[in-house]
Length: 244
Length: 244
DNA sequence: ACCTGAACACCGTTCAAGT
DNA sequence: ACCTGAACACCGTTCAAGT
Image (tube, rainbow over all chains, first blue to last red; front, side, top):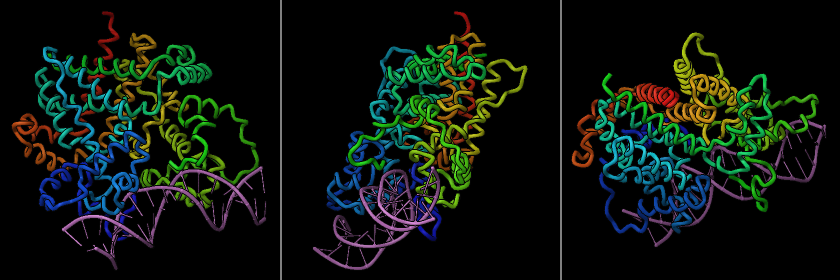
């Protein structure tokens, strides 16, 4: 947001989160292992604590520095800018995705289990969900999740290409369903009541279905939506995997 | 973000985008129709122009005011805060969703047409896509889209409840697939090359499928992902609508 | 009744100067 | 080599004062 005056931003360095950036990162000359009081891990830990405790709005360089007892400027010794910090934080926060589902289940049950688990993790850490867009999923933890999903869908009979599309679709759906309901407690009876009022008071000529089914629509929770969509996606995967 | 010192934010007024907020909005005493040089519509027009031309990062109260030739403070006479402005802007920018698909197509083809059209609209206006989260979809234009989708899925044989879940799932998927690839041109050969390098250079012990299929995976575009996921979702809807 | 000017409390980022 | 202090150019929001 605060770009330097003369140079194009990112002309020198790839944008955090891109493949080029992750690649460049591991080819860097392995930070001189001096006695450092401040480490990248400590910064990310502090950032994660802050994010969980006070939300994405409180994730500022000043607050992170304060939590660590250093100055803002010190952070820039470990991180090129805030975007880079967020990219690293998000990949780290997403490690749960590679937890192993119960053995003995078929591929669809395993995929559903992982998707639900990922969603629950994000619901417990809404700050992470709110940061988890734009940023591409190419960090080590995201890649581990991708490897797992690929194995599942290839095992189900999809080509590597389609398995990749299936894995992305599922991740997109999980993330989208959390983000689209962020800060919106659809299970809250007060919110549900307001939605019923809103639907019911629309113009019945223009929006007849909303008016007619106001009660039903207002009662649908984001859990319902998620379960239905997950079910539909996996059913679709199964159909598309079956030999035509 | 800048909350007043003593009072809880939103203790007085509902959060922009919630059902309660949209309801409260239309019950307000219909702004005294004086000669006003500055109107809400003009503000939203300027904001939209700014958003398209310079992106979400440039959508500041200062820039909007400058474009209109007024001071920042004047904006607050028409809008309670920036969040409210964004909520109104997003609903307005989403009106395209209610365009009518070709007649004579079946419900699944119509749904696919609308989904593609919505996605293309968002891809052409990435600024809108980047703002279109959190904010719930309860504005007039969102509701029009919902009415349309409900009609489609009820016509396909789903109950109103499931039709609502289907409509939400589809919207979630479209939005998620755009946001998840924001600023990431998967069709860019340079980006694709970097992804191939990244996948190919992983540890073959831990991530064998990524290494083995690096070429294939790097070639998958976000268009491919979207088409596959859309197809899967609609196939799933069809299966779940059919009498078991 | 409407709009402005000026301030307030914040941001991310940089960099000379200290140790 | 590492960290600090202090600044710079921005934010959103408020409010007394003007017209």
